[in-house]
View (cartoon, rainbow, N blue to C red):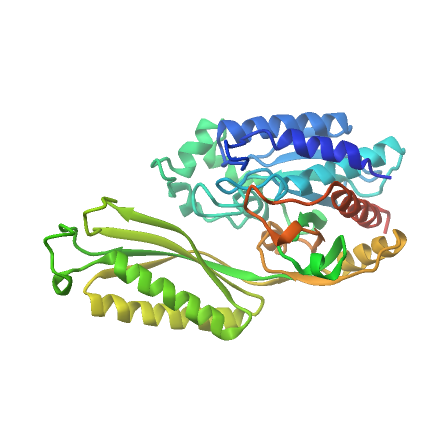
Length: 409
């Protein structure tokens, strides 16, 4: 069976890369920290007996041969990049569990009909360029060229960052896989919620992934002295932003299923005694039902425009990404269910409110996910935690799931 201790040691070692003074982890795409993480995981892949390469998007891939080299590949993995000051499990668990799965197979002399590839996708989180799932979009052939011009907080474009990392942006289309070349994609991930913890179960099988929209709001007013400008004469974009954010919360709560979040806020020029000239923030809006989500977004946009008019500020709303909900494949779910039963644990089904790389890959192959219990439901935080036993349990389910999918048809 899978070596839980080896998996745990690798998780802890990888978690030292990009570690911040407060214990959180920051590993943004195309940075020195990400490069170190990739190099370490590549060494694990080689120890596992995989052939290792990086594609044109910088996706790190380790390949285990199958008896039929022309058969569609079974893909398993996740990502290594993080949000700012995040945790050590979100992403890395799925990659390292994939390595552990194939290493265990190789140690046991198990040969499969289908090749198996473990992938660490480039920039799933979108923390640096405010546009996520770059590597999986590239693999699916759906990465829009315009994102190469997106810039980070320091003004560096995605294209420039790729070049600094030794990649050629013009070669990005070469990362695309054709439909039919991937049999299935399976990802092990921490739940990032409290459902499994509340039910007392270490592992769950995902039924589908909620759809999300990211919208960048830019509100422009007039920078003036905070003490010398009467309230009635102000064109304050910060006050308008606060009002719009309150609307977002109100409309998201109204449905009972939608979630709306503003996690980034930029204020210019940012002086204590200056009415801001410009405010920018990004809305993250999600629901398992695309129609419900889109209706909520329509209402938010309408009310935001009304607020901007009333406050005499200029509002622009730019759609950064729009991902529809994706249902997990029956084939992958059945394989995961059989794995749970084989291991003596009760299959438990739940949706994913968080987006994952599988959303992008669903256009070229069936996808599925397995969740591991999260302590207190915390994620994207230094307090993010899943126990050694739960990580091992999830990896064991992944092992049997991948093994079944990779056998001869």
